[in-house]
Image (tube, rainbow over all chains, first blue to last red):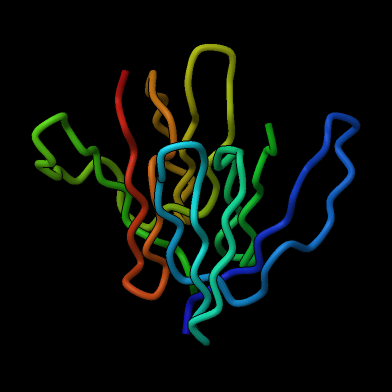
Amino acid sequence: MCEANAYLVDKSGHESLFLEAVDKVEPEEEGIRLVSIFGEQKFIKGTIDSLSLVDHKVFIKPE
Amino acid sequence: MCEANAYLVDKSGHESLFLEAVDKVEPEEEGIRLVSIFGEQKFIKGTIDSLSLVDHKVFIKPE
């Protein structure tokens, strides 16, 4: 399967794991909703900053 | 390998293939740079709109 782990990246570039095994990331009114392959969902005020898919990484920039 | 195909999504929701086998998507000054697993690169003024990773799809919203 080709899910990826989602990490929050703060202004200093520090990465912290936010949600594992993410399948879908969808825009919502004030941010984005992440849904994992296990059905777990998280919402965050932020945007998708960058991707490194071969390394299974999605980087989110919180507002 | 877990690369994905990048599609542009226009205001009417129409999807058009932009770059196949994308590994990295990185922010740049006025947009984003996409890099495929074959080393092909494309730049576009836009943002990453949504992801459907199990389906190997990245959706880009052009400005």
